[in-house]
Amino acid sequence: MYINENFIKLPQSYLFSTVANKLKEYRESHPEADLIRMDIGDVTLPIAPCVIKAMHGAVDDMAAAETFHGYGPEQGYPFLREAIAKHDYQERGIDIPANDIFISDGAKSDLGNLGNIYSKKSVIGVADPGYPVYVDSSVMDGRGGELLSDGRWSRILYMECKPENGFKPAVPSQGVDILFLCSPCNPTGTVFTREELKDWVEYAHRNKTLIIFDSAYEAFITDPDIPRSIYEIEGAKEVAIEVRSFSKTAGFTGLRCGYTVVPSELKGMDREGNEYPLRQLWNRRQSTKFNGASYIIQRGAEALYSPEGRKAIKENIGVYLSNARYIREALEKAGFSVFGGDNSPYVWAKWPGEDDSWRLFERILSEAEVSSTPGIGFGESGAGYVRFTGFNTTENTHKAMERISRINFNKGNDLEEDFTTLNDVKAIKALDELDVLDDLTEALGI
Ligand code: MLT
Image (cartoon, rainbow, N blue to C red; front, top):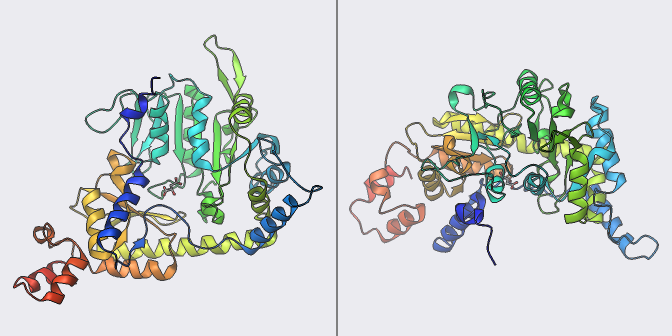
């Protein structure tokens, strides 16, 4: 058999797997390390008691013939689709019916799987930096073209985000078929204003573009003027699919549940120009390749819309947002240039003068035992940056920032080559056998 050769064009490992492997190696070589994880956006607070209770109830349903559930609807159970339509949309003045909502096992799967319903020839537009699933899954489906020497793909349009444009992509002059937009943005933590989203919706109408709007982090928006859904913008239902997740909102990273809205107004064309509702194609895709999210998990997600569930979500998000704010302020104070951390759990930071994300990552790992995600992993425009998450505990967040603030980033690079870690230095200190000890500890700021 022949393989899908697009896979061999891709870098060997997915960004977060590469980081996880580096951390594994670090742990193996430093078994005593007190590592604080601020890399992948994985939550730490436990699931709300009302969700646990609902899931226990659902487990009990499975134990009796009268309440047992086998295959569920591939689109999701009506009880959850209706709760989402009512609370996430209709109560906020957005007319999205339950029928346009498709429950899944998470945003990441849907973002990748949506590629099944648009043409292989589609030209993709992404913000650079951006969530790597947009590019990697497009490449897997054959939409990348060739990997260029600058690390970009020949058939993908990259919309550069830099400090000069506040790390927000500008509407391109050229049209694309599929446009991935994310707000609050992973990884930079920036958000689109209503005016900016209007420009994107107009662009999509003008160019017959499908926007895939990733709003996995919408629950972190506290500013009432910032849109939480693209459907707050008039005309968006004709041009946009919205993808959401319970992972960061409600701690479901390990439970797996999200949803995608495909409005019935949204149409695509065949080569002859005949129009087809995308909802119909997505429904066909899901009912063929997906057997629905677990009944137990969907019952848990439903409980999030109860008064207790909503209160718990608000409290958890409040903790993560206050961690992110703390990170932002601590890094600014330490001299980093910083974005995000406001309406978002992510903080995007650069040490002035350091243009290598992996070196900054290594330095923070070895000298503070804090992990981050190298910004270059999100695209070439992420070079020099690292991303921190507010998802750790408050205690660890404070500890991590305290450790980072003690790193002397302006010194020590010459010594780093030989003595790269806090533990190396600790070991040398214990042996007390090198004359350079004082220089070394001063250089590493410990
Ligand atoms: C992230 O850290 O960007 C996300 O948690 C990764 C993911 O959701 O796949």
